[in-house]
Length: 325
Image (cartoon, rainbow, N blue to C red; front, side, top):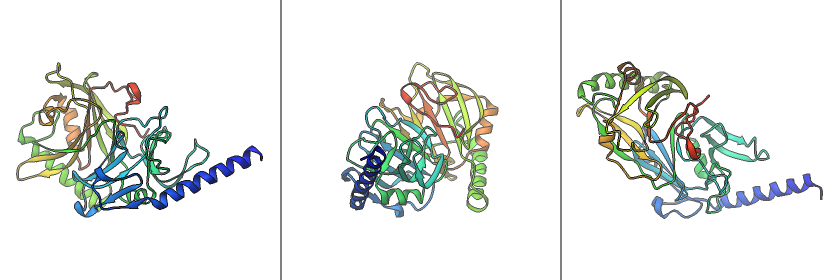
């Protein structure tokens, strides 16, 4: 048997094994904590619309999907094996391809692919042996990946955590990174109304993300993955570490004049009081105004105690946001 024939048979055998496993993967009515390998749940009726957030828990080998801070789906998964670990951090969905094939691993099929990095990390259907086994991607049951592909959007936030992380809700007056007085709320609220209307009736709003690195004392503003502004940031109580957190804007409460955030920690650390964390940052008024003018539901603000060089990567392959370019 020549090598080409052997490789062809090996690929076919792997495909048959994956197909058999995926056929056994099933939708179940269980809590996320009770899911067995290959199982997933799906409860979209719990929250019909609004900003989404996905959390991949590497220790649990589970994926959790939240909409408006409410968990609407969960699934088992398989992340990167030793030597090919899935990077932790905060990502944006950069590309969607229902029938993608790997350009690195022998044209292997990667159905329902949601790309997280241009270096090859993605969410897609694949082999789930019950433990970390991929080359860095997050493998999902086929049926779950199909359903997930139907609701994800470019720019959606995905947090990959090496600790058990679940979002909590935070309300805060005005916009962070400055004076927290409620007098800011009117301007922010007007922007939110405008962007919500544009997204629902005219064209999708551009995706805005903000990255704050405490060690660097820097702030970067991303729009559709490109850095459009950067500057310095002051951190109050600088002797106290800044929490590694992602804040996703869920909406507003005009009656109480507050913004509603869904926040999640990533990385192993002591949990901080998130309400006080939001008040620790101060930046240039012009940069704060630029952020306020681009405020939208689903925007993400990342605070990190890691250094964030221009590539937005730091030690240990930790990624805080992966740029489109």
